[in-house]
Image 1 (cartoon, each protein chain N blue to C red):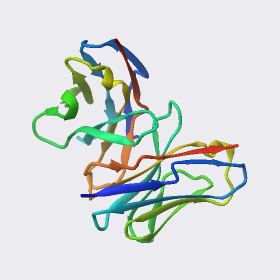
Image 2: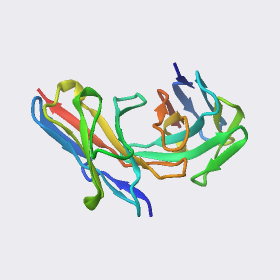
Image 3: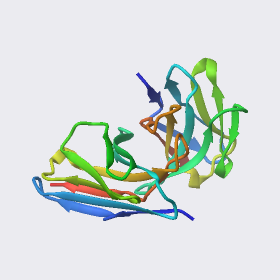
Length: 113
Length: 112
């Protein structure tokens, strides 16, 4: 079955530290991959997306993600976290020729001052 | 530019009452439209999507329904709410196959 797994429900990091949020997908081919961020009580904002080509994708707010086909992963990274990055992060994927987007359960990021 | 509006932002309803959440998109035509529900710790659950007027695909059997009476209008309804319908409902649109989703600000529904 097609699915997205975000194994970390909560992550806490200190401000200025590096961050990596994990995402694994289950699908027989290469999907289209997305990372979204959600502030409390708000809608979701796209951070970055991967369709094809360069496996290292740059996004907004200093985030990047790397697609690794061999590991079925699309991990999100940021070299130095800011207090304003505290939010919930969702990994999602879509498959070619469909209109359906499948989301992971999210990772809630807490940033310590 | 394209915008998406969703209302009401907050709703408190008794069990057994009806529901209507509305979503409209501006600045684009023939969008694909989506309703998601977000429950605490469970991520986003796709409820319905629509690729055209009157075309509704349901992903989860439940007491909710969706309608698309106009090209850029998507409505989520229920005749009788259950406690389990409580949650945060998000409307979204996309411009075609696998383009990014653009989300509304969400509607918080509490069923008492």
